[in-house]
Image 1 (cartoon, rainbow, N blue to C red):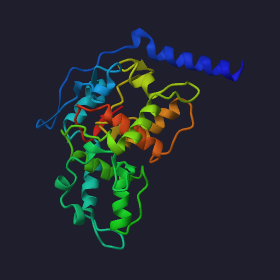
Image 2 (cartoon, rainbow, N blue to C red; image 1 turned 30 degrees about the horizontal axis):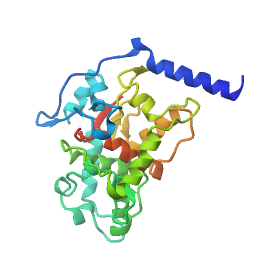
Image 3 (cartoon, one colour; image 1 turned 90 degrees about the horizontal axis):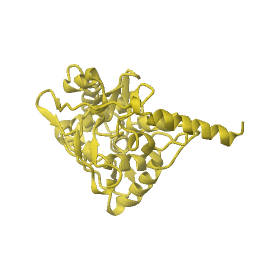
Image 4 (cartoon, rainbow, N blue to C red; image 1 turned 90 degrees about the vertical axis):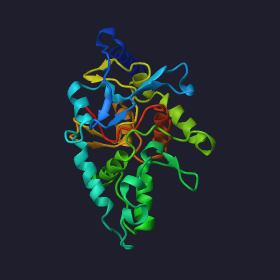
Length: 286
């Protein structure tokens, strides 16, 4: 069997697994309201640029089980809040040669970080596209004189959870025009590019087959409004780029690194697909 034939068979098998009609399941028709006082929009008309691709956009929360949806409804039951509380505690801890904490520059996290998650990723003053993690490390190295945190290190994930919580109920508000447009276009191109031996793109699962099952996974639209999320499978917090890395790996391709330019471009495009939805601030996923 030639390599080309082998790849064709693998791709056909993957598409068959995605498209088999009996594997389709309905998403939930519930409404997300965290702690009974923070309603979150989980369904909305798709943005104009998605015309011909999607009519409506849906949070990944709607595709989860009754038990995992219930976890996200109550902070007392949501396992991600343990990590978020650690991030909030660290907000006030001085670090580095300057002896500064996050609070020294930004004030209380509830005010200083309100709305930040909703507009990420975002162009910095130099016109570079940065994710939230980039901004955190820039503060640490340039203002605090502290060491940068690893992209998927515990302290970094704790802090991104703590910041995300401050944008709960706020609409996705990423900039995709002007200076941001070239990054958005590259992210869009990546979204529709087929990768790996299985020759699958992001769209293969999250646009063409959301609602179907692939193995035990109920495919969602891949929206980012719940990120960072607590994954039950990992028993821990998972970042956006870590999830991107896992998806590309699952196509049996060499993947990109968390924090790479490729993933920042993709993050901007995927975030924009959630326009109309609201930030959940710590989701629970399988």
